[in-house]
Length: 164
Image (tube, rainbow, N blue to C red):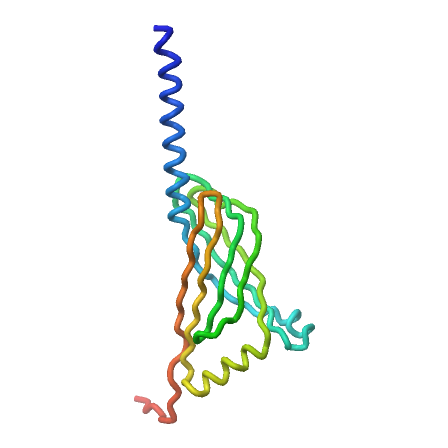
């Protein structure tokens, strides 16, 4: 009887560890990253004499699993109509608890001259804007890939719509 108790304790501890690791793996694989909003930082942009546009990207990280996820780093590439608007890399250190959500705001900027190239494309191709944000978030459980596509606008037409 004395020999069974230590073996049972080690077996139970092993099962608990395996269960914990499975929950952590599921949390890392199922972390949801959704864009909430993008806002222009007008005071900072004014201070830069509009040569650089400063903006904030707010993301919502949702963890629907039974284990927390520790976020360490984020890297994003922002492209508009196949033009690179720059990379965003930020070292982070926070946790998204189990069964919860957390919003983060990342500060970024781009040169105004890059925006002028986009305006030229919009004039040539109509008001079709394709925005792609791709990259990854490094967590204590591995890397979570991010890829968002958004189409904004439509074509410009000189015809007037009839009202009913």
